[in-house]
Every structure is written in C-alpha cells, then in structure tokens.
Amino acid sequence: MKFGRACDKFQFCLMSFGAHEGFGVSLMNVFSRCLAMSLVLIVSFGFSVVMAQPAVVKGPVGVSFNTPADEDNPHPVPFKATPGSYRLYYSRTKDSKEGVKVDLFVSTWSKARREWANEGLVGPQVQTKGNESSCFVTPYGIYPQTIWFSSTKEPGNKKHDIFGAVRDLPPSAAGEHRVFSGVRALTTIDTANDENHPWLARDMKSLFFTKETKEGPRVAVALRQTVDGPRGFEEAAIIEDLAPGYFHPTLTPDSKTMFLQGPREGGSAAIYLTKKGPSGWSAPILLKSLNHPDGRWDGAPNLSRDGLTLFFSSDRPGGKGGRDIYSIPVASIKD
Image 1: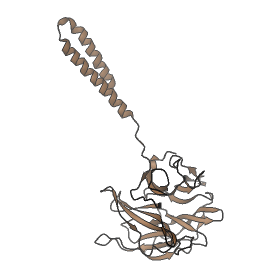
Image 2: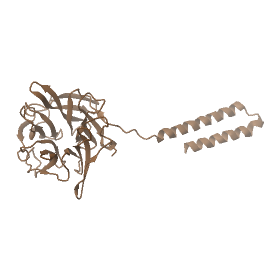
Image 3: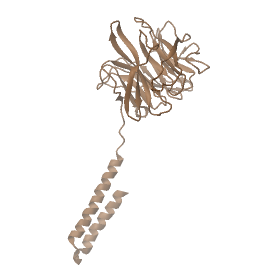
Image 4: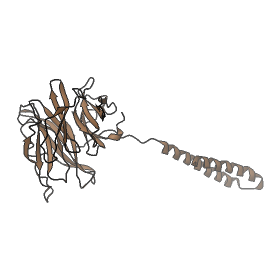
C-alpha cells in the first residue's frame, strides 16, 4: 500500500511540473518536490522488502561451562517460583588413578542475570567411587524433592542400576541446597542387566528408562499407583514398538512425543523422534536437521519440563572438545 501511494505522489509531482512550467513556477521548487516524493518511494519500497524477510531460525547453542572433557546426559530442572531459571544436571568424564571416572554435576541458569553460576558436584550420597551418569530430578520449590539417578557404585563395575533419594527441605537461609539422602535401589526395576537414563512422566506414575538386553539397549517403562518418593514401581516392561538400539527416552508433557537416541550411519549416535498413536509408538524418525553432518555423536536428548527446549550432547565442530552440551528450541527442529 505504501509503495502504491508513493508512486501516485511521484506521478502527481511530474504532472505538476508540466502544468506550471509555463507559469513561471520555480523549477527548483518543483524539483525539490519530485526529489522528496522519490525518497518516499525508495524508503517505502525498502521498508516493504525488510519486513518481508523471514525470521532467522536459531540453531543449537552450547553452554558456557563446556570443557575439553566429555559433558553428557544433560537434564534441566525448573524453579517453581522463578520461571525461566533452572538448574542443569549433567555428567562429566575425567581420568583418575583408577581409570575413567564419571560424576554428576549441576549448574544454575539465572534468567535475570543471563548467566550460568554455582557449578559443582551433585553432592554426597549421590556421588560414589563408581560412575554416576544420568538423572531425573523433580522441580525446585516442591519438597520433598526426589532424584532418580544411575550409578555403578563401585570402581570397575560397568553395570548401572537406578537409585532414588530425597531432599526433604528447601535451601538454607544462606541459599545452600540441602543434600539428597536415603539413597535406595529401585529393586523392582534393577536387574542383572544395565539400567540407565531415567525419565519420569508428568503424572509421576510412569518411569521410562534404558534397559540393556541381549539384543541391545531398549526403552522400558515401569508403572506405580502412588506419586510419593522415589519407589513403588512395578516390574518394568519393554516397549516392543521401539526396536533394539533406540533408547535414552525423554517425553513431552502429554507423553505422546518421545525423543530418543539411536544408531548413526558412519558414527556412534544420532537423535530420533517417535510419536504415540492409537496403535502404539511409531517407527523412530531421524532428525536430520538436528544431527550435525560433520559429527559422529548427537545423543542424550533431554527435554525441558514444558517440552519447549531440547538439551543434548554432541561432538560437532566448534565445541570445547569431546562431547559438549547444547540446547535448541523444539520449534526450530524442522523435520
């Protein structure tokens, strides 16, 4: 519309020049009017072009605390009282005298300050001499607060089991978070095989996790009737709709969409998506736009509690080294 009005005014200007030429009207005045109308036309047209440009899609962003070591298995936990702020749990691998050691760390994202702070180990009782690689934690501001985590417990033990613990009280007056206590194994879930990567559905009655089988890692789920504490689950069942090799589940709040880790051609891991319909879970779809073509590893998917942001680990170029943690708005994943 602005472009059309500018053209009309420009045409009127030229007509005005012809109509007054013989009447002694100042040529300079007419020229000035024409120049002004031309500028209106140019500016209007330029503004229309700028407004027509599509929005730039934001790609994955790495967290500032990535290091040359491997950061993996991210898990964001929201603060009930401060939306937009959260604590991010993750594993970090390092070499020790006993060999490779994997510990759970946590760092705090402040929405107000737009920065990460207070990085540290998850704390005693959860941390052992073995390897702790992944966890699921209920929101801050709701107590007791529960953590489910995987651990080998002892050095040299390669088998993970899932354990639960509780934090009874909110932070101290000085702002220090209390320790999780009362660590107990989930005896109805833990078996002689490997159990890892817990994810609790929004109803707090369905625990999804990775279960190692003779065919390979698979997604399993255990149900319970109560929502109190970390235990009370029945024996787990394999989700038969999802083939071996697809695991590390994370679900949207409605439990109808699942991101998971799966095989990668010429590499180690890639991220997939499956949806639940009337007949069960669909065949996993490779998220080509998310998995980096120059990397060998994109894995460990983990959604924010509102389902709007996906965290994952990747060895893509541009990182700090090894596997690093990235996040991306789910709406930006175009597959």
